[in-house]
Amino acid sequence: MLRKSSARQDNLYSELYNNIPATHILKTIDSALCFDFINELLESSYCKNFGRPAKEPETMAKLLILQELYGLSDERVIEETQVNLAYMWFIGINPGDQLPHPSLLSKFRTMRLKDVTLDEIMTEVVRQCIVKQIISAKEGESIDAMHISANTTKKVPERIMKHLAKKIFKAMEQTDYEIPDYKQLEDHKEAKRVMKDYLENVIELADERAEKEVTKAKEIIDSPLFIEQKGIRSLIDTDARVGYKSKTDSFFGYKMEYTMTTGSRLITAVGVYSGEYVDGTDFKILHNRSKQSGITIESAYGDKAYFRKDILSTLKEECTKAYIPVNACSYRIDEELFRYNKDSDQWICKNGNHSISKQVKTTTRKDRGKSTYYEYKFEKEECLKCAYRSECIKTAKTKGKKLIVGTSAGEYYAHNQWTKTDAFADEYKKRASIEGKNAELKMHHGLSRAKGFGLRSVTIQAKLAAIAVNLKRIAAIISAGNPELLPALTKLWNNMANHVFWSRHAALFVLVS
Image (cartoon, rainbow, N blue to C red; front, side, top):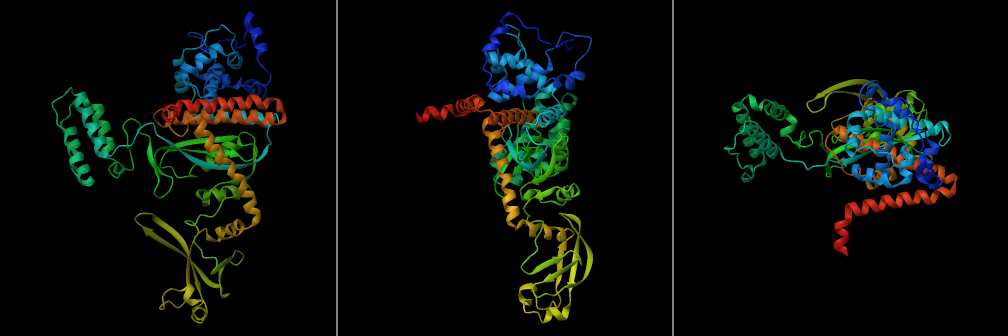
């Protein structure tokens, strides 16, 4: 249960806190933000009247913040806090007070810090910055996605089916089994077929002792995505999926999509998904979450992946300027040959001829389903004598031009014309700052690779990293107005850089030496 009063009673050794410099990074953060709201957010997850007094949620959350700021493990952050006055002062305890066991940090992350709570913490931090005028209430919003590699390797379906069979035999306490050696088969499709037939036979022979394992095996092999290698690729991390950074460059893991203010560069909303997630699918959710902090979003910035009708429509309804380049996959009009008049809803060719009719067409394809498009027809006589006929009409049998466009082509035309202006190019440069944020999250906060397994674990990791990055940025903004704070902030970044170097490249350093 939570204590009735969370106020700290200073002891004799509290005078030692006077030795902490006022320019310390943690004092800068504490002077800008109040973390009392964390207790209120998590109050309902604790018993009010029964049980032993629990560690204060604010204290536990601040330990996790220290962990992300300085790149420490659960054990190391407790060890460092025991001997570091600034850490003790920041989490709100006195020298000599007992710290929680490292295992409680893991329990607090998984049992108390739900996704919604982390979102609320992020929103409240940004809201306090607006109230205290640390950042402007009117900002632009950038959105981007970055990939996070899974904390395991992907397996071929044959190997997964082999492990599923082993689990069933183990549950039935059988050791005298023989599994086909699929590696001897050169044909990958044949190997998958052999292993699937074998696993289905094992499932039929299994008894009630392996009921749990059989249910899981059936669920996996019954999915058509599994055999096509688009579903589960690891039994250790069943949420991770294969995604693509380009046509030929793939990764196995998760995607983190987030929004960031362009001026102050604070992360306002974070979403984490499996690797096959399509960028921009949850744009509206993240966009609305950003506005909950009190920010008035005047403009939005994204790359070509966010050139989507639903996103552009949402921004248009809110009178938000969309600085998003045109994606050629969504808009394929050759503007050297055709231009659009939105007032008359007509397309005009290079020779000055206007379309004379418009029809709505529908087509059905196996891979895409039903789709609707517009067909604009031009006057046959004009097309027959047109000087540019060979450029426009490819076959001699066709007399009049039929221009096929998407239902949003008219809107996209106007947007594409605007993206070619110098004003758009100059303003779009503001989006570049989010690439630096991607690098910071990956290099200094470990988001290049997941620490745990499963979507929930990666979500907590990503959102805690985003909160820590925001706190560093807030301290930097305050330091810009107070040059005396800059050395402390520089020291923090150097410590983080050293930690990343020694923890990840120690072996390489020895070899080079």
